Length: 227
Image (cartoon, rainbow, N blue to C red; front, top):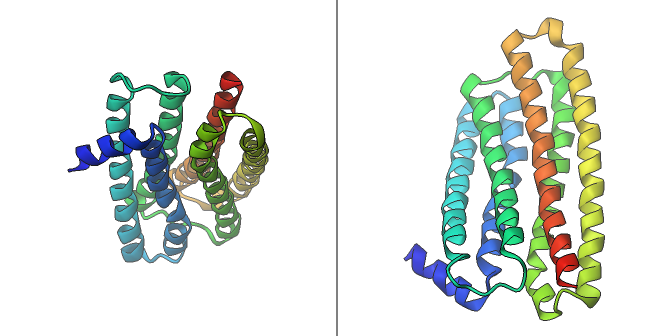
């Protein structure tokens, strides 16, 4: 049934399955603030429920990715180079993978998040969610881009949205530096493994924002290559 659904989506547009994949990806990321709140409050039962939900969504996204990659080369005409579509799907998938990695990393250690880290980390997560949400909106413009031949007003919209994503990713880099400074200031109070884990979490968040930026960049490349 799942395979037939993918075929039906491709029959309507080569972009619909990619857009559906991005919906799954965003669903993973949108659960991160709630997970962080539970972890910061030592509510590991609630955190485990959310972590499991993210895992299941990431698995669904991964299965969808496999179907998309199998179907795209199979004689399906695409209005843009396939390599850009492949890269777009891989970038989307990376965002979901990182969400799963972050929650697994935290819950496997029941990582204690120091009080001084909670606020900057929460702000960082919000920036990552905002960046991914905007990348999702960019992907949602694919159908309109196709209708306009990747030109005109829709192309301008993608350019503007890509710049907004880049600005958010710059903010994420600033958040990374701020969070690392806070963690560094607490190193002598932390278990060494907990400190390493916290550093890995904030590094992962920065990579997640970077992957979201790359999603928007693939759409801008589609506009350039189709003009």
